[in-house]
Amino acid sequence: MTGYIVRRVFLIVPTLLLLGTLLFFMLQFIPGDVASTLLASEENAATPEAIEKLRKQLGLADPLHEQYFRWLGKMVRGDLGYSAYFNQSVWDAIKPKIDVTVTLALLGVFVAIVISIPVGVLSALFRGSAFDQAVRAVSAIGMAVPAFWLGIMILLVLSRGVGWAPPAQHADILDDPIKALQRFMFPALILGFRSAAVISRMIRSMMLEVLNEDYVRTAWSKGLLPRVVIVKHALRNALLPVVTMLGMLFASLLDGAVVLETVFNLPGIGLHLIESVRGRDAAMVLGMVLMIGVFMMIWILLIDLSYKVLDPRRSSA
Image (tube, rainbow, N blue to C red; front, side, top):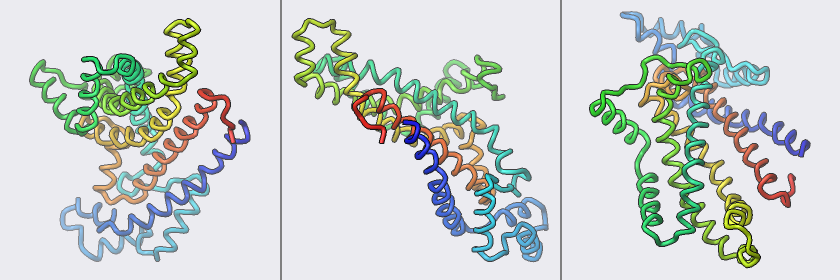
């Protein structure tokens, strides 16, 4: 198991370099650059001569291969580069944003698991009932409704209906849990609800399949408690494909977090990423996409390791 983890961790480095290389060259197709954006904000300063001078100062006028190998050299040393648009290093700009996005995504995962597992299991156990029909209808709605639209509707209903608005200032969840939860509650519920809609349907489907297996019928015939048969024999095996789905859903949760940070004005990576794209700040965009890639690879590694817990027969290799 230790060797497997070490190999997977070492694979993160070349994967990040490949991701960064592809993104570096893709960003060259975006019209404009950070030099023109910076000078555009100053009246009468955006002359062609001034823009070209600033581009040379920032190294943007160098041949593309020189820019790439300069970026690659910094990446190998663990340096994400410098943001001319925000006038600070990329890491210093990203660092305070990471906990917001990761907290929101993890709260979304928590909400999705808490909702989807009992709902999916009960829907399978009471197949064809009114509860089952209601769950299937709500799940279809959850998968069809976009996160940003749901977020805007909730904000409108809360603000005009009960006069509620999220706190203007962001608070760390460890320093002020109440204010932090007020900021995170609705975006986390929206993220979790949409993911729960997908996961609960999968759990229902897998439970229906597993409940017809011979080993489950044998467990019933032995007179075991329903809790033991459902949780230990049926649910544990039904969760294996669901764990795989959870790994893929985390990517959509991060995407959803990026959108909802904008809707709910949360100071996370998503909101910062949009500002960076507007500023044509390629260094910042590269740094943030690579950080999201790191989170995704760590999450996928945790998902792979969870297979070992759910099914010890599986080889760690």
